[in-house]
Length: 470
Image (cartoon, rainbow, N blue to C red; front, side, top):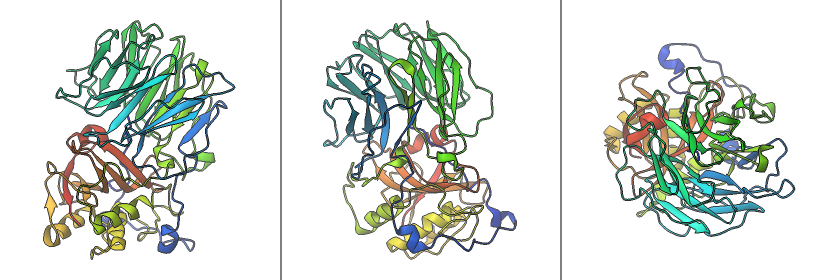
C-alpha cells in the first residue's frame, strides 16, 4: 500500500562554481578516497526503524540481489511477538519476527520490478504487485486477477487487501484504481490532472472505502473513507511516500522521504526522523514506506538504503568487467553525508558534487574521464569519446543518467546518477551522489528506483534528457 518514491536534490540547488559563488575549502578532516572505499557504507538502522517501541528484527546481513521496496506487518501478531515481511524488487521476500515465509519470486527473472506488497488478514499469505500491474500470490493469498497484460497510463505504486482477503486493489501513480475479487471499485483519480503523483493507498476496516495519498500530502477519499485532514498545499521538505490508516478508521499517518511523519484524526505521533537519525541532521535515511503494528500502537519505517546489496538480480544479460566495476564501486558508497562541511565530499572540492561523484566512480572503475563538477560536461565528454543515448533508449548498467532538458547550462542539466540495474521492461535503479532527503549541503549517496525513465518527471520531479556511456 505504498510506492518506493525518492527525491532528487542538491546538484541543481547550488552549483556554486558555475554560479560564480565562493565555496568553502575542504575541512582538515575530509574523508580520503581510500577511507571512502573502506566499508561499511550503509545507512544506520539496518533498514527498518521502529517507533512506539515495536519489535525490530535483527538486520539482514547478507547482500541482497535487489532493492527492498515494500513492507507489510503481520496483521495477527500479538504485541509480545510482532513480525513483518520485506519485499525486494526481484520478488524476494524476507519474513521477520513471527511472520511466516510462504514463498517468493527471488529465483525468477521478472519482466518488471515488484513495487508493493500486502498481507492476507490472517497473516498466512501475501501478495506482491509489480510496476506493470502483475500480481503474485503466496500462502493462502488468492489470485483474483492483475493488470499485467494491460497497458497502463502510469505505473503501479501501491496495493491493499480487502478485510476478508478475497480481493485487493492496485493504485497507479496517476490515481487510477483497479479492483479485483470482492474489492469494490469506489472511484479513482484516473483522468484527473493532479498537482502531485499518487504514492500510496490504505483501505477502511470494512473494505467499503479507501484513501489515496499524493506526494504533496494531498488526500483523496472514496466510499466510506472519512477525510481527517491533509497537508496538500503545504510546502514540504520532501515528498510523502506512503500512508497507513488506524484500525478504527479514525485517523491516518503519512510518511515523507525524510522520515517526517504527519498524523491526522486519532493517529498518535510516536516519533519520527525529524532532526535525522539519532538526532544527527547529516544522517537522514531515505524512507520508502511505513507499516503499523497490530492495534496501531506503533509503526515501522522502511529505509531501503540500510541494506547491503549485490544488485545481482535481474542479471545483466551481457555483463562486462567495466560495468560490474562501476556498479560495485557506486553501490559501495551508499551512505549518509560522507564528509562534514557545507557540500564537502570525498570526491572533489566542497561544491555540489553529483557530477564529481559520477566521474569519480567511473575513474575508479577504469574509465579515463576527468573529474567534472558540471553534469553537462559528462554528456559532452561521452558525446566525443564513448557515446550518448537518447532518453527513450535502453541504458546499460554503468551508464550515467542525466536529468533535465539538455546539457547546455546548470539550469537545463540539473543532476546525474549511475545506472546499477536495468529490468527487461526498461525500469532502472540508480545510485546518485549529492542526493536524498537531507538539507542542502549535507546530502548523501542514495539508491533511487526502480522507476521507468519515461516516467521520471512524475517519479523524480524532473525528466531525463539522455544517458552517457562510459
